[in-house]
Amino acid sequence: MAQLETVLYTGKTHTSGGRDGASRSSDGRLDVRLSSPGTPGSGTNPEQLFAAGWSACFIGALKAEAAKMNLAVPADLAIDAEVDLGVTDGAYGLAARLNVTLLGVEPEVAKRLVDAAHQTCPYSRATRGNIDVAIKVIASRTDQTSGKQPK
Image (cartoon, rainbow, N blue to C red):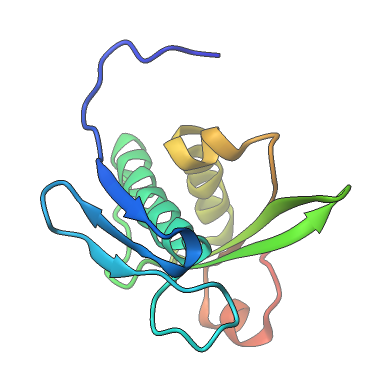
């Protein structure tokens, strides 16, 4: 396991009650109620939080990689992230899909950019080899409406 050479930031939270509890960050910026998936509770769940965190981080990695390639990312750059909670071999597990929208970027360029971001994003690195991850790149409106991945 690789050790961090330099710690850039530490996110701190206090969570109580598990999936039907609450979580609050040490700085008070995050204060959420939690609910189990599929229940009538009004809170969010860990899978939604993970999807939000990963997609936000992945956008940061995309922007960093685009800067290295001297590329401008579209203003409407977005990721629709899906995190599944399921059972495998009698234990709980996760699977994820990141649908990356880079409208107006040539499909080959978009794929290179997303592949580079997937190599550097800390969430991608943490999940690599641990959960099933699928990444779909949408580089044109045609790709978005047809649901087909660019070649």
